[in-house]
Length: 200
Image (cartoon, rainbow, N blue to C red; front, top):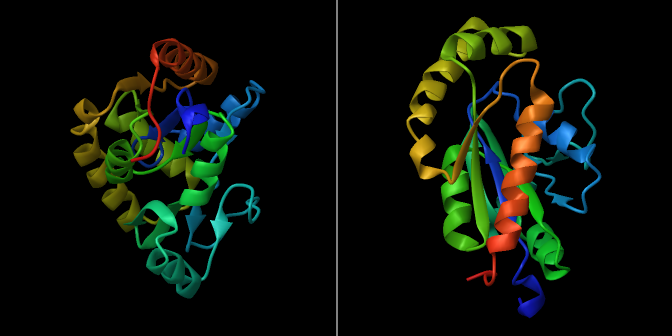
């Protein structure tokens, strides 16, 4: 990848479903920092208001499988019946230009990225409580009762993985800007400490 990548970071945002990761990313974009936001590829159908190539790259299963076969994902996973993947070219190109990269992924994906990209910072976004997480999931109204129970059960398991992350930030309701400010501080501190890295 070259020396110009040496100070570029991959910031991985993860956490349970419903914790507010998309809202955090939307707020981060308002900072107008020169970060590259990875557009995740997925086989799920767009939700109302989502646009192809903006929130996600929406792919047919066949094309997603083809990208797996060609090793075009840094990591991919099946999440609640849909496939999600981080396109390798987006990350490599941005870091090759010396940009810091922001990626959102599931817990296992975060671990995978940490192993592939030495200059990665794993940030776990946690809810104030499981009860609050349940309230947020119900507000979204994108899940039936069975799916809601499954997501909550998974969230409880995922909360046990917080120790695998470099940082844990509790995303309190009404304090989104504070959550984002914490992430920005983590990135700025990591930039001061980073001296070498790149892709293995």
